Image (cartoon, rainbow, N blue to C red; front, side, top):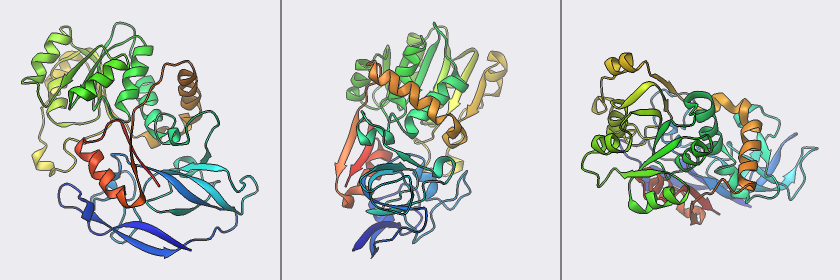
Length: 337
């Protein structure tokens, strides 16, 4: 039995393309003591992966050329040397990688752990609203943003895997939510989820002026998933004691550092006494059970809806990555094997 894998061919110079990776075939692995072997059914595509294919230092070790691409996935156990896991169980892990079969060690701690797919939800939900994006939105709002009734919250990449959850949770916390996205279809989706207003950054002639109209008293909470000009426009319109969550930089991640000069925000931060904090979700893995219990309850109560963008076929994984990074996707990007 063979195992197809996508390995990093070379570090991209600028935006990654489908040629950034190449497919190889190896023998299907076998589980050792305390391990399980899964047949992968779903792969997750997430913006953090762009940092894993850069030679620059990052918060986690990256992928070297020739290495299997990192990524989370869901699969069915087909062999088990672990007393608590049986053939036929469904497993989710951030340690699957871009491959058709993966050996997992369930007892590893933190984000390297293997988790059971709970009953009563679609199995791929553990890669989206009941997975890492859900935890990101939950801790970003409850720990850093902390919106209260009457606050105005702005979220960029509003229809994406994290953004669509941020808006729905913020509404449950009593905030007025403004979403920023790159198409009218995406904004219509956000409004259907309960967002109060939206800005199409691709067609809006002046994002700042649009924010002045929608939030005349300033922005209390900013959940930033993009960086770039959107970041600058919102930072110059913060309300007193605003809270800013820096979650992603997808708008500028492919650019050289010298091209992302951005706004000098220090004077504005002094005037508003605002707080800006970076968010790495893996720092908050200890809050996973709490977050997922709350998200699952909101889902059962009908408060959580979710859009997924699914491509079929292992051959399309690099295509799905490019689709995610360019904003062509609609919601959470997944590949179904």
